[in-house]
Image 1: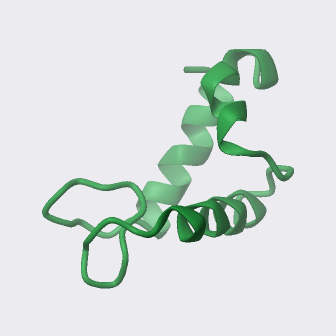
Image 2: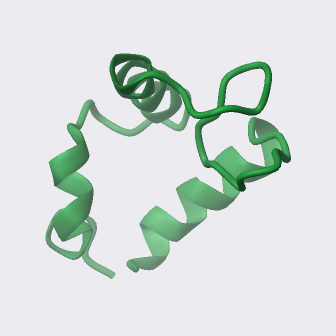
Length: 69
């Protein structure tokens, strides 16, 4: 994983992630899996909060291309 992306993920985990039984990155307020469409919205909110331009899930499959180290 490129260091730039790792940095943003560390910021998210430190400031927004809540521990949950299933170790989900995005969980609802009860710690359960979020609905698929809500995960997409949460991803966009998270990217915006981190100052990263809008991106879809598939962008992270090749994050080394988007965020070269």
